Length: 228
Image 1 (cartoon, rainbow, N blue to C red):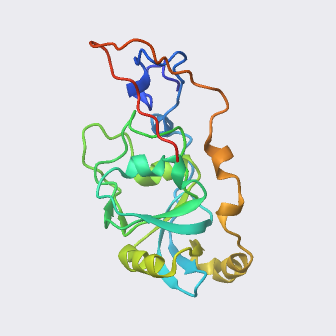
Image 2 (image 1 turned 180 degrees about the horizontal axis):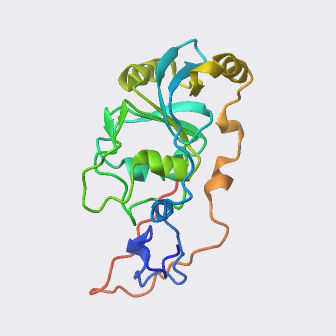
């Protein structure tokens, strides 16, 4: 739902910014959880995570059904998992959370960084199925299900993180344990997501005009702009 609707949107801080001539209208990735009647089935059962360097880890599937494949990366934050999952900078990658408990305060409306979940897969030690927060509208698994992103838990994510730090770029794939041979074959022909135009994938196509006019002492400051 757009910013003009009744559902709390993402990027709410920009809504009343007087320095934006054409305030962008963003949906929030969490909007999909307000109506769960059509939520895809949750993945379950034994899963395996295979690394291109030969590493093999067994775990339990959650999130959407299917395979997660791409470059293995990690984030060390203790909070902000919803923001990380919806951050376009993780597009095309397999995101590993080093903090062992993900999802304890649930998913909240209006707190996403964008309208989508961008990683191609998520690896965690434990994903909470019963979050404890009065404003929660769903679980991490439900958010992944809604956006077609598979996950795997009961994995020693800190051991994996140490491996990535030592080796650098590591390609990986995870999915149902019974499909291990198929995953090995897919891993052998996998290419780095860096070969794709990820910037074009996550960028907007319309310009946003900033008004650099007179200082407004009573209003909000000019927005900060970062170039990466």
